[in-house]
Length: 369
Image 1 (cartoon, rainbow, N blue to C red):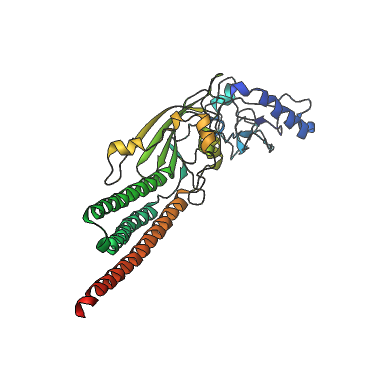
Image 2: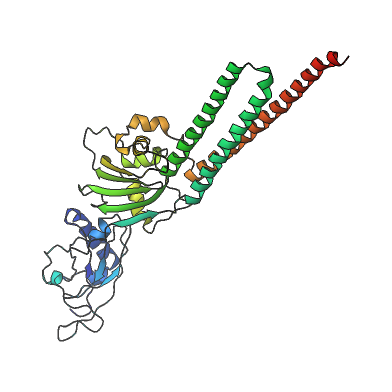
């Protein structure tokens, strides 16, 4: 009848119990309007974009018998009911500003399928570490040159007192040490860069763990690394760690730098990063750095699908520093080690030259007399 209140909510069929909760809340809040009326309408449908992506938007509407009007949405399942009095027109047609009659209103048994979310959907985005990487790479090269110079000065200092063969062995070991140190620190630098997650993209499947669909996401990391992960619900005897544990405990392999990145869908991102699903399979795409072979690039990347709960527990908390901070630490270490070796080598060189000059002067003194 004219002036009656009608409430409509969008839910999935497996969650029909929530319909009665909405009805009870409606009657409790509007006892005078609802008592004795048969015009309280609950429309069951499925809004995949909301509920399926863990926004859990329950579209609550006020409508006469032929009209559906969205007026409020609720997050995380907490229903906030609002209502307006909609006057029926004598002709039975919706008044000005009302929506036209929908097929769902004519047939309340038809399941309402709302628009699918636009996939792929970027849930996380962060800038790459291009400047930090270039600065670290340049500094490692300078550090290798300075370290080699320091060792060369030291060898020149001891050359007057060292036989040729031991001197050549020492020269070879110095060259090998500089090369190994540079390779080791370069690998550390590349590993830190590939930890940095630049994008997290939702490609396929529902994020809701109620669904049994396979969730497919892309982890795009800096350094040309892309991980395509397929997440499935764990079985009863599943031994693999959940994806939430992989993210929280496996910071050594993937790191979301909250100081640099941002998300336009924080609730959805949190649901993914705290998911109880397990990694069923993983596809890797690695682009090698300059002077790095493809086999070395693939061999230095840890697959998340191969991680075990025991392994994650053993490395938990060992590498919680962000990749940008780790690169800064690598630069400091290279600067300190290069400066120390150069200083010590130069001191040895000066001391050796002074000792050699003194020995030569002492040897020449009796000849002059």
